[in-house]
Length: 274
Image (cartoon, rainbow, N blue to C red):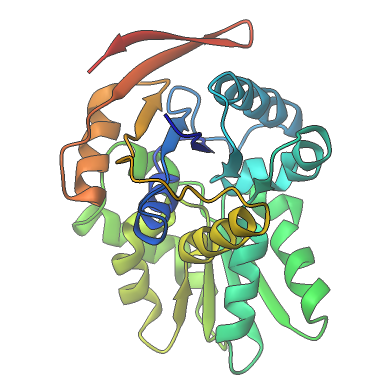
């Protein structure tokens, strides 16, 4: 079996990145791990986020992955540099691809960023955006209520509309581009678009991250060129039911090879197979 691309996230949000990887790289095999048991990462300290991220990384390294994608903005903000330094395989985060996409989209140089507390407090997006264009006007807002809502499977309806409306009210203004600085947020993108209005371009880093993965795999001669049909594997540290339901909603099909795993002393071991 050919080597897989490893994808980690604090929960189900990274499935939006996995979906885009499957669309752009249909021959590649994915191994996805969502730490739904300890989600959200946003309110946690950088020390906790680094510890949890390394535990997930160690699990995937045991499966001999050829590339690691950190499909979590908070984990990217706190661990990307360290992971790039210490791992021998290519490592991609979701912040820089999202920042580049927003800069390409904005017309008036007013960009908004929404994310978890950890991502916003790290100023990772502000740094990434200003490194490219220091003259940008950037407005950031933490939306701590979004991730728990998505993790519970609440993706649309009146309650979601009210939560998004209340959270984004301070964001309305001159911005013409809004970065969804958390991979959970694309799952409620339609509601966010309605609240912000059609005049605001909504940027999800998923598409840009997948494009970057394709480029880097090609550069390192790691693209799979055989004829073997990829069999993807999905793991969750929490309840399988919610993540399986959301996965089917995203991919529009039943996903096999779904396992529950638990973390003990920095070691993940398979508990059951669905």
